[in-house]
Every structure is written in C-alpha cells, then in structure tokens.
Amino acid sequence: METKELQRIASQVRRDILRMVCECSSGHPGGSLGCTDFMTVLYFDQMKHDPANFTMDGINDDVFYLSNGHIAPVWYSVLARGGYFPVPELSTLRKLGSRLQGHPATDKGLPGIRMASGSLGQGLSVAIGTAETKKLNGDNALVYTLHGDGELQEGQIWEAALYAAANKIDNLISTIDYNGRQIDGDLDDVLPMGDLSQKWQAFGWEVLELDGHNMDEIKATFAQAKKLTGNGKPIMIVMKTEMGQGVDYMMGTHKWHGSTPNAEQLADALSQIEETMGDY
Amino acid sequence: MKASEIEVLGKKDTRSGFGEGLLEAGKRNKDVVALCADLTGSLKMNAFENEFSERFFQVGIAEANMICMAAGMTVGGKIPFTGTFANFSTSRVYDQIRQSVAYSKKNVKIAASHAGLTLGEDGATHQVLEDIGMMKMLPNMTVIVPCDFNQTKQATIAVAEHEGPVYLRFGRPSVPIFVKPDAKFTIGKADIITEGTDVTIIACGHLVWKAIEAAQELEKEGISAEVINMHTIKPLDEQAVLSSVAKTGCVVTAEEHMYNGGLGESIARVLAKNNPTPQEFVAVNDSFGESGTPDELLAKYNIDTPDVIKAAKKVIQRK
Image (cartoon, rainbow over all chains, first blue to last red; front, side, top):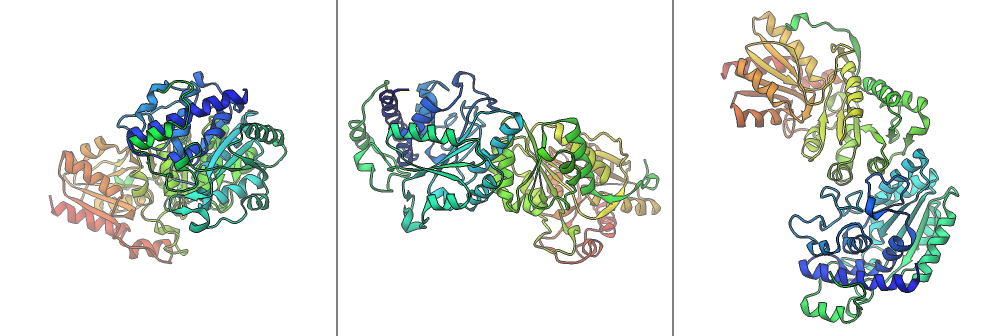
C-alpha cells in the first residue's frame, strides 16, 4: 500500500484511540499512539490475513499476538478499520458486556484475537508455540508479535528467547516497542535494560533496528525481516518509538502510559490529528 | 461389589499409566504433541518421544515458557500435553495457566506427576498439596485425579479426546492396580467401587486404594461402606454423591491434598446446598510435608488406611 494511504489510516487510528480511552476514562493511550504506525503497516500492508473470514486456527494466515496487551486500543482500531468487526463497536471499549475488553480476550468472541494478554511476558512463548505448530502443519505463513520494552523485565521473555534460538524458530518476527518508558517512569530509572540489540544478538536472534514513526522504514524493515525468515534464526526488530506520538503534550513523558485525556485535552489532541476516514 | 471381592491386578506407578496413555493417544491422533521441562524420564514420556520425535518438544527447565508455548500450539489445531512435576505444573506457572490456558480456553492438557506427599524423599519443596484447589478454582478447567495405573492410562486417552483445558494429576510411587485395563474412563462420571449402606467414602488418586482397604476392614466389623472413586474433581459428579448419601447418611472424603481447596470441600459444598450430611475429612491439615518414604508420610500426616477407618466410624456416630 502507498505510504500516503498508510499515513491516512494511521491518522484515523490515532483519533480512534484518543476518543475510545476518553469515552471510558481509562486505558493506555501512550503506547497505543506510539505503536500506531507499526500496527497500521503490519495489518494494512504486511500481514497475509483474511479479516472477513477470521478463524482461531489461522491456517495459512499470518498470526499476530499482542504481548503487551495494555495497548489494546491501537489493536482494536486497526482490527475494526481493517474489517474484522464493525467500526462503531470501538465506542464500547471497556464497557460492561463489550467484546473490547480492557485487555485483549478471546472469551467474548472478538474476531482477530487468538489469545488473552495483559499479564506481561507470555506472548513470545505463545507465538513460538504457534510457530512450531505451523512448522508441523507445513504452513508457510508467519507469526508476528509485539512487546513492550518494559515487558522484557519479565523473566519468561528470556526463557522464550533461549528456546526460539536453540530450536531455530525462523518463522517468527517479533518487535519491541522501544519507547524507553514504563508506568513508574523512564526505563533507565526503573530498571535499565542495557543494550537491547546486543542482548538479543547474544541470545542468538537476528536483530534489526527501526524508527517506528517512519512508514517507509517500517515497510523496508518488514521486507528485510521477511527475507531473513527460514534461515534458522528468530527475528527481533528493535523499534524506537515515542510514547504518545502525534499529540504534543503526550510526548516526552511516561505520564500518558495509563492515563486518559479529559474532554478539553481530547479536543486539543484531536485538533492535532486529521480525521481521514470518518470518526465512528 | 463388596470390598472383599476387589481383585488386585498388579502394582505399578500411575505416571507409567500416563506414559502409556500418551503413547496411545499419539498413535490415535497425529495432532497430539508433548512438551517436557527436563523431566522426560520421571514423567515416562520417553516412549512418546522415541515414537514421535517430531511431535515432542524439550523446553528445558522453563515451565512458564512451556505452558504458554502449549497454549500457542493449540492455534493451528495441536493437542499439547505439558509434562513436569505437579508443583511446577501449577504454583510455578499459575498466571500462565490462568491467562493463556484457562481464560483463553485453549486445548492444553497439563500432565502433573509426583503430586502430593508420596513423592517422598525430595521433601516439601516438591510435595505440592495445594494443586487441586488452585486448578479447580480456574474457570474452564477440568480437574482429573485417576487412582491407579490402568485408570491413568485410560484417563490420558480420554483427556486427549476431550476439548478444553485439563489438569491431570498423578503420582510417583508404585501402587496397587484394581481398575480393569479395558474399563472405559468417562470424564465427570464417578466410579462406584463398592456398594454399601452405612457410610460413603469418597476418594481420589492414591487414597482410593486406601479407601478400599478401609472398606475391607470395616466389612470385617460388619460395617458396609460405599467407596466412590471421584476421579474427576471438576466437573463434579454431584448426582453420585447425593445418591450415595441418600442411602448411607454420612460421608468420609479422602485425598492426598490439603483440606483447604480439596476434593472434600467440593463434596461439602454439594451436600450443604442439597442435603446437609455429616462429613469427615481425611486430608493434610494445613501443613507442608517433609522428607520420608511415601508410607511413612501418609501415616505421619494422617491420610492412611487407619485414618479412613477412624473417620468412617466417627462419622457414623454423628448420624
């Protein structure tokens, strides 16, 4: 898809995120806005999938897991705008009886979601499991994951990292949202992670680095990552992003990780982001 | 059948029943896969590994990764069995099971060996006595505790054919076999082992044999005990419980587990709601275990045959 068109979609996704979390006065806008460009490219340009005929098994489809489930708003918006479910349903986020739970869930039957997430650190293992199943099934489609950088503080991530490299899980493309911030503050203040790329390389992964707000670079990096699949190594994209990207007062701080704008702040934010596909 | 008529067919560990059942399940269905966290020999998974090496996944000492990998493997139609000790199958990975297996309703079978005190000499770090409680509290989870080698084999095959998350608990020591090898295992349907009129004894796992021994002793004293093998803790066969106590008017529950959260509490809830009945509990009294032989431990922690007999006599007096 043309970069211009992807940017147009991303603009609407950012509006959706802000309006959703404002309406229910809860949720996580910061990371959602930071991953909007990535998620838009992934779903509208990269993944092999069939939104109208979603199946839990995803045979011959690329499968995506959001391991940092708290940025569900961006996933929900991308899924709805991509045709998985009706766009007006976005207004039900976090409300009683909604299929759009505060963190992604499978029990309400929302198309596009194959695993609950929210408790951090589990998605990489889940993705490896699906990648193994695809290999057993002779299914050449890929498995994608997205993780928070703070999430890497969970020990299970490193169990999975060891397994994937040792067992040549080379049909997996994982990405870290490296925004350097978590709820309690900057990553470097809470628990410094050192050199992420070196860590993943040392664990035996193929590592790519990416500016997560440059659509052309996201596309090029995905193309490169896909070329690297099937070569005996799992792939990790370390993606630099800005939490709250697109809204001036939300950038440069961790404060909007899990807090939501009031009506006035929403109006300010929306004035900075073009309505391109029609608000729900 | 009377307790004295029960025939012992041999002696073997329940974990070997799991190993044979897993191999058979693997032969019947190519989607059955197995994962193990560095305890292949202990879990008796070698036969499956040898026969189906491409469907066997050694994950190393990384149980959290194993549980979530298993959940991910169901996406695409596999039926994964995870294998490690009961303690590392539950308390160590509770959140992984809760989110990725139970809440996500994935078709994962958690095979948990060396449960309870009868793991023996390794001591309390490995002797989980809380696992039935933890697992039965999870929505969507089926909890199965078979009693001998033959039943564990049949239960394993049944579990592979059942759609949904299952916790399958078994043990380490060699114990008497009394279930016929071809006896059909039905999840959620209790086995009435002996028919009786004076007291109902409901047990699971290794304590079923202890309950039979107790019934044999009671029979000699003219006390007629109905022994029920409640191999499925959840969903519980409530009808079997209520039908039996309607005859006997009192019940003993027996399990290799804590009082808190165990089989006994599940039975007590059914009775309190439907037919309040005197009940005695043979279970571990809010305590960790310790090193020792299985027999020594069952005796010391009051979950042995004499304890079942004592509880039966006591509960009859309470009628």
